[in-house]
Image (cartoon, rainbow, N blue to C red; front, side, top):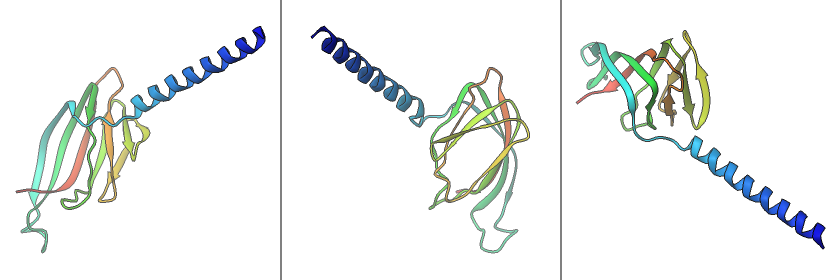
Length: 142
């Protein structure tokens, strides 16, 4: 009889530990919606209307993006109605980008692209130094 109680206690402990682990994993992968610790500095912009027929209201821009340690660019999309295709090139530091919830680490000289199919993601700096990159995109301005 004592053996049954020991086995039951072990099973209950295992179930409890499994539930705690799953909750912890879910908390780690929950997408942050707020952006914090990110500085964006405009570098250049070109109004595409006079440059390309049919591109009225769109701007081609380049920005310097700095993620402080612990900085996060919250969940966002590049889909219509204001599709915003672009590229990001990492100059220094490390970033983790979550595309469709899948994490990938980027190091200096790495890059990624974003298009209207990118239900992107969020990006975070889990490192101890700032991560700095260049973002280039086509943006619908007002």
